[in-house]
Length: 280
Length: 279
Image (cartoon, rainbow over all chains, first blue to last red; front, top):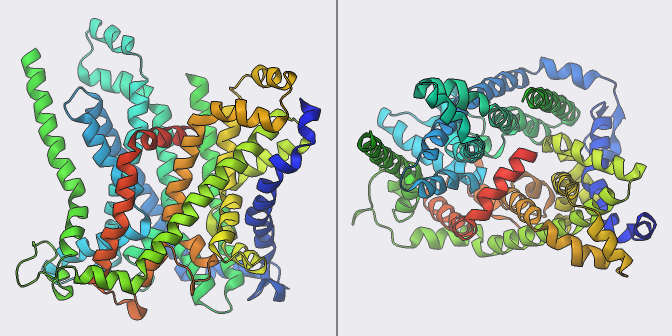
């Protein structure tokens, strides 16, 4: 089989390999290289060593966006997972219309970030207009607005994963616990929660990376207003590239830092998931 | 005991019914406002259109002309359908090859694909748009190649993961019976891959249909726009937004999404759960 396959390499792998090289490998390597250069197009790059990386930390907007993103990620992990888990717990009880509710809660997840941003901009501005304010009045409004938007979008998605996790818990465990006289509360904390740890890890990680990479929603809801105070990392990088001339190199260096940050988070997650799997 | 449980169940159903209504309220508000005159949308966003504020289909007419909506819809549809089809075909073939022919290349390619899933788009954004520019990929056709390249990671990862659980014996039997690798793949392997094809297809569709930044940077915007780009373009310079046109376009762009969702809901929810557990 091995030999027969080898001749077919150009048909089976070459299209994907070529597109992958154009779409990922070359841009990635060039990106690393350019982060050490001063440039405005790829062809006029001049090597400048690590000065781009030094400049990043002097850029107050970047440092602010880093903190804003981290805080937002933390808040969204807590809120989204709390709501998603609670809803999943209630929906796995036998209640009428559970399927319909599941359908409704999942629906916003399919709507794109740009569309979501404008929907909620109208709603928030509508509510705030009663107090003669707008969404861009202060960064706190933008923060909570974005959080509500993300909850609306992602709770349904996480709920699906939690429901799958809850349904895979063997019912014998509950029967045994009931015979031993465990209260519903004890069952929740001693059986349900520990047994859904794998799903909780997955969802924590998903909300974490989703919030770190958040771009469309951020752009459409506040576009970083007021004065870049609600700008998240991804938007900050894009703005550095395309709204400030002469800063392309710094933008690329920020992108590399961003990439390393996301990669570290993912690795950490993988390690945590593996450890949990061993324990079970 | 049973009676108490039943009452509790009814209470929960009522609670969730109310919550569901609140959940779809934003969509309802958008639809409602799309029939109001521009000037009233921001002033009274939570009131039903009255005789004074009713605008008929005026917002829709304006929105459609301002965004070139039908053309954007066609571009979005073409790019999404073609890219997903190409991704499914090419990456499933590649994944089968690398999981059945163990070589250094196969291993390296697999790990590169996994690695690419970790890399955020902003990392390659600038260089990818320049590379695409040099290769003249700024058309809907070119965009398919870019999506194949950037979407390959997740797809190859998921297909390879599934291939591991498929016994190789069936394929070997097919080969012994005289099938060449192409026949083996299309007659034997592809039907087995069906559930993963659906999962990958749905994940990539959701991504490509809603994607904003990649097509924004790569497409020649004077000639083509996708729906997210067209919507963002409604926001003029200085951040002023024509809310009448915006409402109408938002409603129009949500309709295909909801239609898609309701028609393949079962697959979507399953696909998402499968993708999340693996990814």
